[in-house]
Length: 113
Image 1 (cartoon, rainbow, N blue to C red):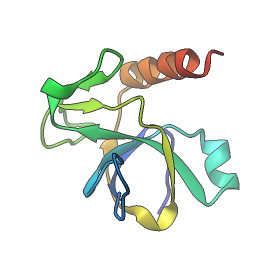
Image 2 (cartoon, helix red, strand yellow):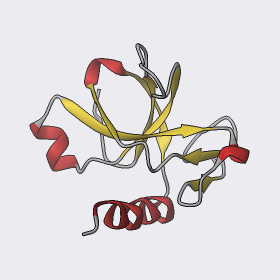
Image 3 (cartoon, rainbow, N blue to C red):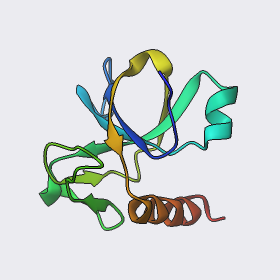
């Protein structure tokens, strides 16, 4: 499986603890390709279809032929996590450059860089 920056995968979030996201859900890879080649962990942000629960910084994503999401979704930018590659089930699609630019801008804000 060739994991790449900006790709959307179905990821198994179980087992989860407390307020962590649960179940199998789409997630976007936010780790640079160079980092992906050097580690067995992959850094992602999950997506949810619960648009009404979006926080101020979350990023809305309309489904399209490139991302291949089933429904309009929200990138939960404050939920930055890394998982072992074994949790990645299958590739769904690719996030567009505008959304990835918004994710980069959020990361600069989040980490104050």
